[in-house]
Length: 615
Image (cartoon, rainbow, N blue to C red; front, side):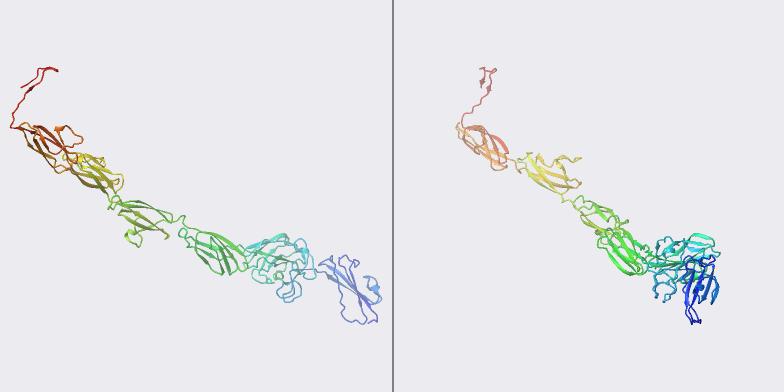
């Protein structure tokens, strides 16, 4: 109200050196004439201002600008006032904040997201090696706006959903009060730190300087593989530090972006092996992992075409009708985390296999066959059902069969797992033993030129023979055929390699009647050649030839049956029938009605002698 402009000058002893002569320690402002009220002054605080100590502050106003702008000396008018003040510095965070709901509370402007954290800086209480101050929060997309003092945490551990972690925090507390560190983690990425498990703390005793472990429990539903906000607040005021926003009277705040890795999702598996070799009744019961976020999806890859998928699974899921082999089962949860389990569906080491050692019936019509069954593979014990007695329930036949007659025998073998194998064995029998004979009968009555040619069949080679003509032998060692035998009945017993025998009797015959000869003689008369011999042949085989002695031997025999006009004398006859059988006789043709001459001869005593005589 002086009628002229006045000069108002403020002096701040920022470096607390007892004067106001240093750079930036004077701030002048004009006060227009007529001003009666508050005058606002913008006071820039230098970075090197002494913090939290009493510093001198002086205000001078005068219409004499030169006097007003000097901290000492006189002025022609106006006033001077002195004060004691303190410089307070604050630290703020730098998480992303767009002053809208859903963003982090970082700045001091509340756009619905809250007011950011602020800490008054005091000596001896800090995170890391250094701390700086800001006028407000320094939000940016990477939480590095206040990167100059974000050194309380050198490196974060690998956070894994559902697993604990330890964050190592470097801290200093050289105050006279115990401090506390609170760590805040936006696990669900909703822009705040208000959810369960998003806050943890650790005390920092007086005089401590070094690393402290901050134990963290990462919830199973933490959002993986995305940037999540983390805030760390250090203060001696537990109440102030126990919230993620608002002021604290001391300490420091540091903001970071972290990421959470997916946990290893391991689906639980219970395998049921295939009961039979190459069967397809195995199964895998897959249970959802103990960690992860429902619902879960399963994808499996097995041998051949045994692949598949199942979505929105929240309880155990069973893969059925599986053959043996290796299966890879991948599970994914609602967060896209995955895990794989590889399991094998087993099976018996080999199928039920059957082999038979059969013994055929030894003799035709017998029932001494047998089957020895050999079972391998599958799962012991086995049951047996043979076809010879019809189906059994339960199957209770023996493994092997004996005393069998010829036929086909089918066995069904079932192992302990119900696996079935079937095979058929055939019991055969030899053909019936028989014999055919070719007989050559004795040609002449009383002869021994008969023969039997024997041909045996059926049974099992080789054969042995026992003919009745020479009595029983041990062993039987007769020939199959007989030769040079007389007429008679001949029985042969044929024995095959199995000891089966067959007997047959064969008759060798001879002509029923032997030849007999009779001669009717007609004597010669009077020494004439008018005698006759009438030969009658009985028996034998017609087709006779005759050889009379009167003409010497003939070859062939071609004499007539009878002789006529023969002189008296001795006559021999040999008759041969169609079989070559011969019969001989003689007859004398007498001389009737003529002189009867009887001669008795005496031989010479010596060769060439002449002393023989006839009386």
